[in-house]
Amino acid sequence: MWTKRIDKAREATEGHGELSLRAYTADSTVVVEIIDDGPGIPPEIQPRIFEPFFSTKGPGVGAGLGLHIAYNIVVHRHRGQIQVASVPGETRLRVVLPIRLAGSDAGVAQGDSQEARNQRGRMIQEGEVAPDTRSPE
Image (cartoon, rainbow, N blue to C red; front, side):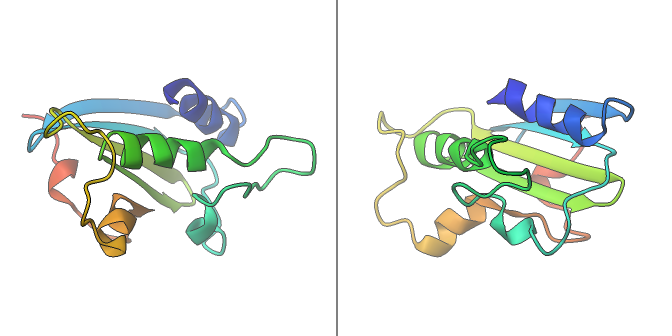
């Protein structure tokens, strides 16, 4: 998953931009951020980026499953969060994973509401500063 996300960020900058990787711990989680300074994801397609088979590329170029698969791995298998914030000049993919899973079942906890599942894979709202975005001391 990581290699593909980094490759997509590099692709977005057409090989001439800056790519930053950050990894740190916060509140019993590991946070990994991949940030590029490319053109950004257009606002009109941002709500669809986690959908299966959604792609901005032409027919025959990619399957449109990358972020959908990443979402399923992070959210359903590891009970984490995957978030994306994008404006022209900065796209940030943030993956938040628990350091330790409760029990041995790594699937989504029974009783999780749809809203709780949606919060683990969503767009970061403009100006939002979540506790897991603090820089390490």
